[in-house]
Structure formats: C-alpha cells, structure tokens
Length: 219
Image (cartoon, rainbow, N blue to C red; front, side, top):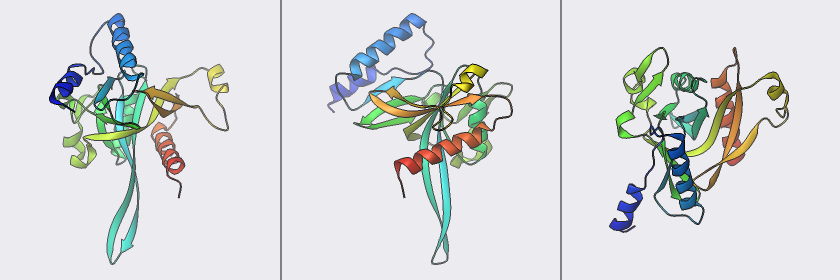
C-alpha cells in the first residue's frame, strides 16, 4: 500500500466501544458495510459490539528422542452477548484453564487477506480484563506472559444468550444452534450457547472450538 492509502485507511479506522449514540453507530456500520461490500482491500478494519476475544489452545504431548514436544492447535474465538450475560467471567474461567486473552470489551478486527480476519486489542487496554465485582484485572500479572496473545486470526464466534423455555425447545437437538456471522465481508461460523445457572460454559466453549478445529482440519 502507498503511504497515502495507508494514512487514509488508518483515518477510517472504527473501534468497538466508542461511546457514541445509536444513530451514530448506525452511520458507522453503514459506512463499514458500504466500504466492504464492493470488494476487498488490505487493511480494512471494523468495530464490533462489546465482546471478548481469546485464543483457545489444545495440545497433546508427544515424545521425540527423549524430549517432550507439545503439539498445540489453537482457534481464535470471539465471545459476544448482551451486557452482564457473563462474557468476562467466562473469559476468566477459560484463561485459568490455560487459554489466552487477546482483547476484552473493545477488540479490533482487520481484514488482512481475502479470507482472513485478525483480532487484536487497543494498546491502552492490553493485558486487562474487567469482571463485575472484581474490577479491572491485570491478566499478565496474575497468570504470566503466556496468558496474553497480541493478535489472532478469528475462526469462531460464540454468542451467549439467555433463553426462555420456548426458545430452548426451538434449538435443533441434533445440530445445535449454528449459523454464520458476517464480519468485514467474511462469513464466520457462529454457535449460540444458552446461558443458565449450573451450565459449565467453559467446557462447552472448549468443545465447540475442538469440534470446529476437527471440522476445519480433519485428520
């Protein structure tokens, strides 16, 4: 990209969590969709509603010439949902299980290739996770450098939703609640998880990510 084009793209950048009116948000999203739909350009970025992005890592150790080598597979997962639905609490549970935090509340996404979206965190909020009742947590200080990832390709969206009995009965018991979500012109697989007391959502998110990895990269 030319320096002039790079400056123009940076000037058009829209961040999640910008405190604007609903009318202005609608204008932002209309501008983004208008900019994306005609075609693809490197460096395009978009803002999403308050959400949390994590890297879910799954590994199996193997022995090679007396040395244990971790065979790690990872998925970039965006967790979305209404305010106070439990996104940050779920993220904290996943981090405590060995996964990595990329961004909380204000993740940024950029389309860096025709079919690749990269998620990252604004520098001001890097390493931090806000949990109701606990305040702002420094994840790097609590769990170490290995609990933080600077950026990750987005592969899966997990949407948390409180459902009534009628909505729960409407979920496909065979295939689950699956669809796709369009982000920057790319359709990302999305799974909706019902939120209810007693449900172990961390295990369900791990299972969803593992299933996605196996489906996308079959052995």
